[in-house]
Length: 376
Image (cartoon, rainbow, N blue to C red):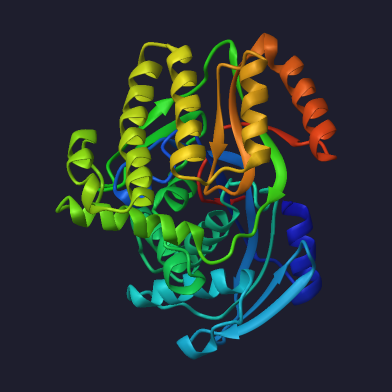
């Protein structure tokens, strides 16, 4: 990607731009807990965004997305906001930096990415993190990495209409090669966990489907959690117990109860997985992954037929753990597989899925990688 991005930059603007990269992410466990101030367990991957950026001495941005070959131009004031699409993410990052006192100048840029769209690997966070990191460096804003992650999150909230938590942007900014991160989304305290499970592999199966649902299902689920937290007298569901939830069950909607039941259970599962990894107990890790999938499918209702089929196939093939990954309604499953079973499992999943749905799932091996950075 570096070569293609640099060549397109030279074609459009002449000369060279500084090259920056930021990754997508996987999340071993801890789904939909970040906006509930809970724990998550993500890692950056070796797929992401590469961007060439050069200040142009104006107050305008000239941008090109390489795939597809599509351009946009906009100013840096609030009234200059692009109509939508990928340009809105870059514009939002510029505005959020400015709100924090950073002086963003106009720039020329070309970017490309290899994070599969709609796969739940957070291509949007990779885009936000790449530009937050690049502009912070090139414009000398002096913003620390914690705030760069918040800038990406605020871009989603204020310019893209998604009330996401901090996990995706945090993983994209703070990722470390060979390590997962346990992140406390309330305090932003985090710890790196070396992740090289001997005898196991992490594999993503991309269903290559994305169901477009009416309304804003992601924001609706966040609102459910907020209503239950308010009934419990809390700001967030973080720290709530199953007993406390049962005590208010007659005061909340059944749907809200089931959403909260999943989140409260998921907080415990994240901590269980951290403890299990510490003692090399991957069977417990896998069982917690299956439990998470059941909760996401039945209580949180963010799975779909195709993803449930892939998880059922994994269980039937003796896969140690599998679950939906990401916001839901399509995308990937993440699978923890004994190395000697991996090829047979992938072959079976491809064959059975194609027989049912008419196309094979895409397969991605997970390589845990570094976070946002400048490329030499």
